[in-house]
Amino acid sequence: MKKYLLIIICSVFCTLSVSAANGPSAKRSNRQTVVLSCNIHCQGCIDKIMKNIAFEKGVKDIACDLDTKTVTVTYDANKTDVPALLEAFKKINKPATVKETEQKQKETAAGKPETVTDADSGASIPY
Image 1 (spheres, rainbow, N blue to C red):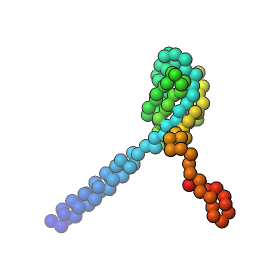
Image 2: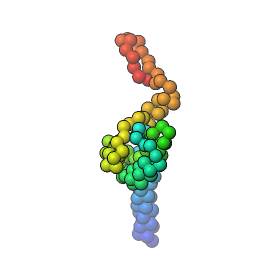
Image 3: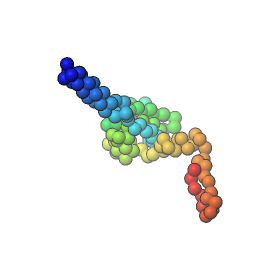
Image 4: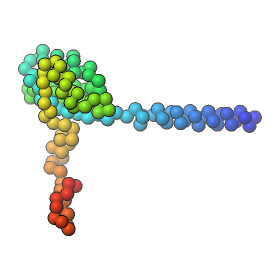
């Protein structure tokens, strides 16, 4: 009887440890957004970008704006990065440049980041 109880307890602990290792924290993605400036002049350009860039490794979402000639790409930073995305745009003959990253968007929305001066040296320290 003690053996069965010990086996049941061990199996419960093993199951819990495996499920904790495979839980949501293990699969967490590092999503980031970048706004790219690209020469888009018609719906055909948008279709070309959507068909090709949407299937690049790590791309989660893509949105094109014909009026501002920008492409907003949300990607998993664990799987790709901005230089790889720019290279993908070059492959389809639509060279792009980085207009804005997620960090710049946050700073723009919040205003200029605060700075604090050090009392001893008088140097400006980012807050």
